[in-house]
Length: 366
Ligand code: G6P
Image 1 (tube, rainbow, N blue to C red):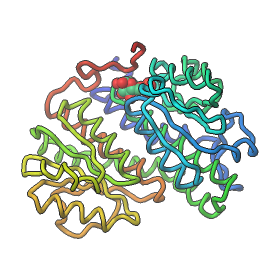
Image 2 (cartoon, protein in one colour; image 1 turned 90 degrees about the horizontal axis):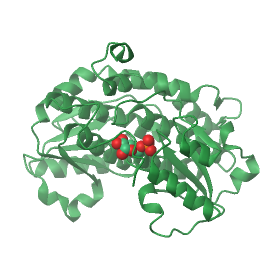
Image 3 (cartoon, rainbow, N blue to C red; image 1 turned 30 degrees about the vertical axis):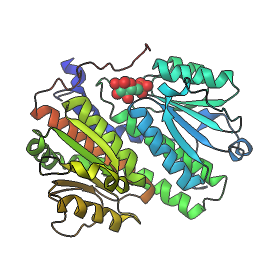
Image 4 (cartoon, rainbow, N blue to C red; image 1 turned 180 degrees about the vertical axis):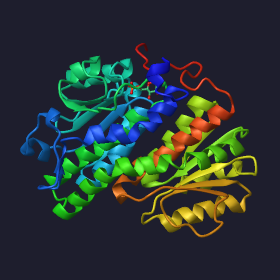
């Protein structure tokens, strides 16, 4: 085990550190500068079939579901195809309407999650076209789907997923690019995304150099009983994943909320004992997000902003800054500091980081 850890104290820390390399592997041979697109040979679909897709539905459990939400966002944005995500664990119980022109994407690091496999089987029974987004080659979901995109994240041991989730997001961005370029995404915008993806591994490594500052913030908030994770639109899946990570490894209660929904209830919970992590991408909603921070601050709530924008001085109590790559890729990069925040909170509290209580790496039972 010591050898496998390669000098890291645990697998979660090791897998966080490996993400730049994991993304490089996921991109290898798949980006095309000439046509400003991506190649995903495992899909087994030609341009005509890709053009015929009426909507994209992502299905996964836990972090894989949140990666699906991020995927849905980027597919709608780049390809302008309606896209949604839902928990695979709910799918077969609600008698879903299966659309033969939709593309269903079953997402799973392990490829063995029973709920996700059952969703695939239900879809296939009803004539749905389903592809896998799976890390483990030869796994049950990969075999059942027969087509899809492998994540190439390498083995992930820590129960809390980090690099697999990042590679899911990278894969969905490539899928969105591919779908966009056979529709009306311009070559110039396509190339901007290609270049953003290529810049991503170095940007991830850059975020990781900020670890000491993030660890210091985590230590200061480690005694919190509960935390909010706030984001809107692109940052909403980021907030959900951030809350999930914190819960999983630190056992601190965390709830993700859409920024605009705060005033419809949760603002009542804001006080000096309730820290909020606000995710602020440098996009067209920046002013709205700054306003959200001000609303929380006005009620005495501490705010940790995670951003790639230039925020007004002192607007938040703590600011974690990350580099810019391309607007559509911001969400992916904004998840990285949240992994470190959860990790260092758990470390400060002396948790069993790689094996949180009551959880399993892959859940192969109902
Ligand atoms: C378990 C793990 C989660 C993971 C989920 C889906 O609940 O604890 O961390 O996100 O399964 O796993 P999968 O292997 O299908 O991605």
